Amino acid sequence: MEERSSKRIKPTMEEDPPGITHPSSSSQLNLPPSMNRPTVSLETQRINRLIHSSHYHSPSKPIYSDRFIPSRSGSNFDLFGLEPSPKKEDGPGSYASMLRTVLFGPETPEKRDVVTGFSPSGNIFRYKTETQRPVNSFPPFGCDEGPGVSRSPVKSPRNIPRSAYKVLDAPALQDDFYLNLVDWSAQNVLAVGLGSCVYLWNACSSKVTKLCDLGADESVCSVGWSLRGTHLAIGTSRGTIEIWDALRCRRIRRMGGHRRRVGALAWSSSVLSSGSRDKKILHRDIRSQEDHVSKLIGHRSEVCGLKWSHDNRELASGGNDNKLLVWNQHSTQPVLRYAEHTAAVKAIAWSPHLHGLLASGGGTADRCIRFWNTTTNTRLSCVDTNSQVCNLAWSKNVNELVSTHGYSQNQIIVWKYPTMSKLATLTGHTFRVLYLAVSPDGQTIVTGAGDETLRFWNVFPSPKSQSRESGIGASSLGRTTIR
Image (cartoon, rainbow, N blue to C red):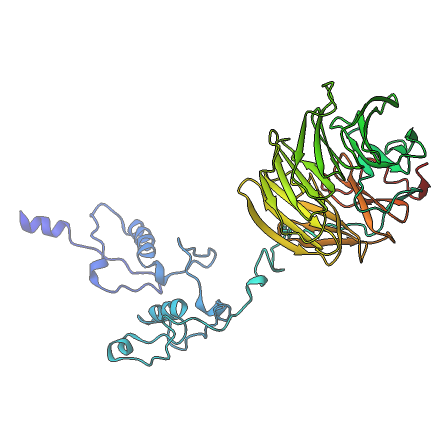
């Protein structure tokens, strides 16, 4: 039985096609007797092609691989600062050597050097001193961006015009450091004291209105708008204060209390504070029948600067005694005293951006702008301007401030806070720039000087667009008169 079975499964081999070779007899096929020789021959050829596909190539179809193996002969070794290896790439140590070079540099010691010791000049744990490309040459700093990638434009510094866009003649505008004769209302109306008269200039229509005339024996020493811009307070040389309804051009009240001229005024809601050459500060509630409701005594000379904080909780006063005093709402004595200035303190300004930040400027012998934190009673910084500081005003849109100056340069300076770098220096006045006011939109300032001119400057940006175009008629260039 076993012999018969052996004869039945005796293998039968066909002649292979030309070019097909067999490595051993283990690849021969065992064929059943029922299969004829032509059929076996065709099947055998197909199977042999599959088995020996590495030795057979179809003349019409390309052969694809299931993975990509890059060719090192086409690689750009210069990109990595490498030299093509002269050794055979198929060697077992070729890949390890190349990987070591890429990771640790071309001077990396071999393993045998590590065991036996290598020169300390190797670059492991050593800073690389040479640089192939500077950092700025790579995107987004450099110019090697790919197609479709645009560089972000560099923001250029704001351009502040160096000349006034409008000039108004202001005859009889006094050249007196201790007076405050210009103020700009929330209704966009400018009030100017000229001699014994007060004039109103509407910034929207450029219309000039004569509000009042005090007479030949009395002159205007200060003007100050209420917060809403409907009423104007006027301080006189006789120590009286008049309250005028600006819309109706009618005086509604006259108050006494001071014995000498009133050169400083400051509003806080319905309370009007006045500073005089008699060294006193009076609080007046215009709703009360009394001329004043409280009296503040602290200065030893004329009060020439007076400003309420933006929250109406603190009042700062400056005097010709070189002192800067801070009062609260209910005190009759100063809660803070600053004596660092060496000249009269007229320039006072509260920051609208930081609570308790106060700026003050000194006169000719001082020339400094000083900053104080009234919340912590801290002296912050000091800047020498090399010129008499006449006025200070903060921008309500950006953290900047402007100062006007007298002896000896008569200039206007825009500062960046807190670095106090100069953004612009403006010139045009030929006398001391004694008066300053800011437009209600916070973009434009007006300055007045003893040269009897009022000059309008675009110095601050708008809060959103950062543009310098003002809505008060900046296109109306030229020189006109205010009366």
